[in-house]
Amino acid sequence: MKTYRIATIPGDGIGKEVVPAGKAVLEALARTNRSFAFEFENFDWGADYYRANGVMMPADGLDQIRDKDAILFGSAGDPDVPDHITLWGLRLKICQGFDQYANVRPTRILPGIDAPLKRCGPQDLNWVIVRENSEGEYAGVGGRVHQGHPIEAATDVSILTRAGVERIMRFAFRLAQSRPRKLLTVITKSNAQRHAMVMWDEIANQIAAEFPDVKWDKELVDAATARMVNRPATLDTIVATNLHADILSDLAAALAGSLGIAPTGNIDPEHRYPSMFEPIHGSAFDIMGKGLANPVGTFWSVVMLLEHLGEQAAAQQVMAAIERVTADPALHTGDLGGTATTAQVTDAVCALIEKVAVVA
Ligand code: NAD
Ligand code: MN
Image 1 (cartoon, rainbow, N blue to C red):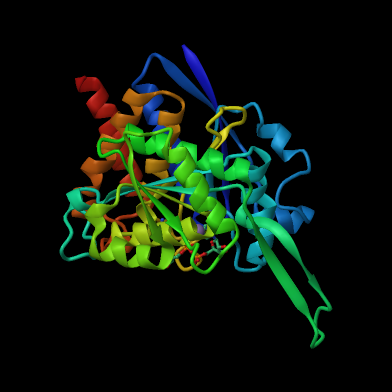
Image 2: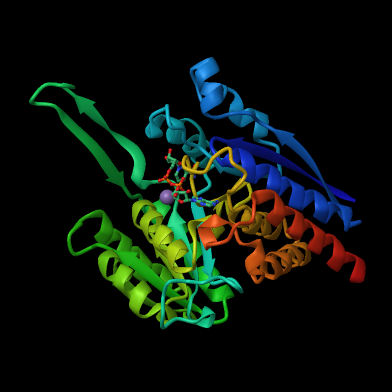
């Protein structure tokens, strides 16, 4: 029997509620299964750790989780600690430290979810956004001088490298190729950003030649927002820079019904390091500590984690349980207009996983 070693990092806010829920789902799955087990180790890194130690995670933090098979992450962000400290001190440290350069964000309208687009059925919105996750606008390069003086200046320099763009384009084309429609849209802004984004377009063209069976097109990021709303069915796989994809994927999540449902994987496609899976939402200060967070985004992230481990059947088993639960309005949390609690949704998904397994 294979034992997968999983690091759980709940972090802050509702991360502390949804990560234990995700762990409960993996435990339910393990109870139904004789071919694999999980060994969890929890890390209490985040804003509380920062208040006690002055850093979001210990200096040797990456070494503590380096040999895990995967990481389940919650959220970094606290009402009393500046966001750039929480984000850079934990989540981005792991993403960059483990070179998780492909951030993958599937979006679908799950059964029973009331999505805002009136002329759009579930079959019209089935996307995967691939976000460049290691450089671009979030490269972290820049500086600030003359603070507080009238001559104060600050820069955030966006950096794209040929190696970085080639590897994310290749990843995106390969992913598009693996999906039924074999359709990729490359998001750009090469009209206004005339250096790096022009290189981005050129490399897209070059990599496209390696994938003659993938249909692809190019869309400016501003026009892409309108296309997502007006012609969602014309999109399938989407690749964009760090910032562009960050914004487009929140829009995608909202169009699919709620930020609380959307999952993401920060993936090292070469499997040199553990990949990290997390809901795309943040700490949700307005509902944290109340047991009201929607855990579905975390459960879907668990599905991605299982796929990454190569456990396709188990991934499908969990996804089927999620879809059975979203189909029941009595099991909708507040973000979906319902009154269910995190615990009720979690119990329902766990019960279905165990029930389906007994039948099977
Ligand atoms: P947010 O995602 O925390 O919340 C936005 C809105 O969506 C809130 O009204 C919230 O209640 C709702 N919401 C989000 N997830 C939900 C869920 N699972 N169930 C029900 N409702 C949900 O975004 P924000 O308000 O912009 O950010 C709050 C904090 O989280 C900030 O500190 C930010 O930096 C951080 N953040 C962290 C990450 C991350 O670690 N990956 C991502 C986004 C935001
Ligand atoms: Mn974001």
